[in-house]
Amino acid sequence: MPITVHRDQSQPMRHIVHVRNHLIPADVSVEEGGADAGPSPHDLYDAALSSCKALTVLWYAKRKNIPVEDIQVSTQRDDSEERKGVYRLAVTLHFTGDLSEAQRAELLAVAEKCPVHKLMTSVTTEVTTVLG
Image (cartoon, rainbow, N blue to C red):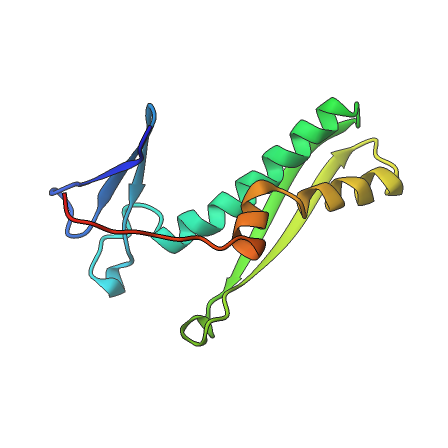
């Protein structure tokens, strides 16, 4: 099923992203001509990584009966060199639960292998854009 994006004409720049039965607003900051009425495309990109790490860790912990209770992911963007080809994301994971240091290290290693992390760091993405 394709992801579709439609303009919300009630706002200067806002669009609505349709993913299956989910609606996600997307906008840009006021400084960029928007109303900040939703996350920017860069925010959504960063959020994809953050949520993938959280979901991957939880899936793994459930499968391995690791007693993680809560998972919080904080991602900090450094886009100061994006135009030079470097986009940095610093991810910090916070776990609660009765976890040993070995289990915490195991979950950290699993987070490094989430599918979106792999897409961002080790896969060549080819994008084709056409008129419809």
